[in-house]
Image (cartoon, rainbow, N blue to C red; front, side, top):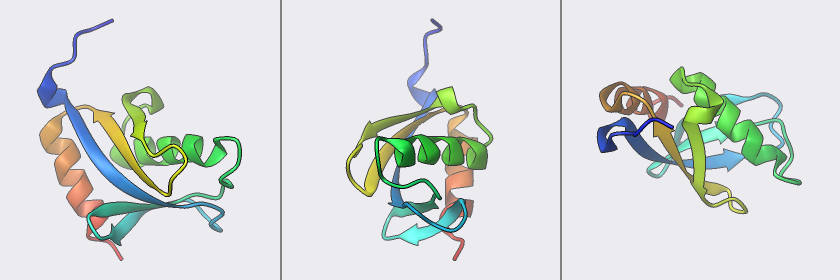
Length: 98
């Protein structure tokens, strides 16, 4: 396993809307990024869908996105592995969407 520099990890807070009509990443809920997923909040399916949606929105592989807090909550903390400046810029772009 490769060592990951601290600068390569970014933590973001997301607010999940499970059972949505379509998957969408964008918008703000306080300081959190809104993630709508079609999967229901049953048996971890919404969590898996959130990881996949965030990875796609940030141009990452699913394995580069990890749920670190909130597995049973609508508010979750995710850890993203990648270029810090790029990830932070993308967060700001997505957070500003309505």
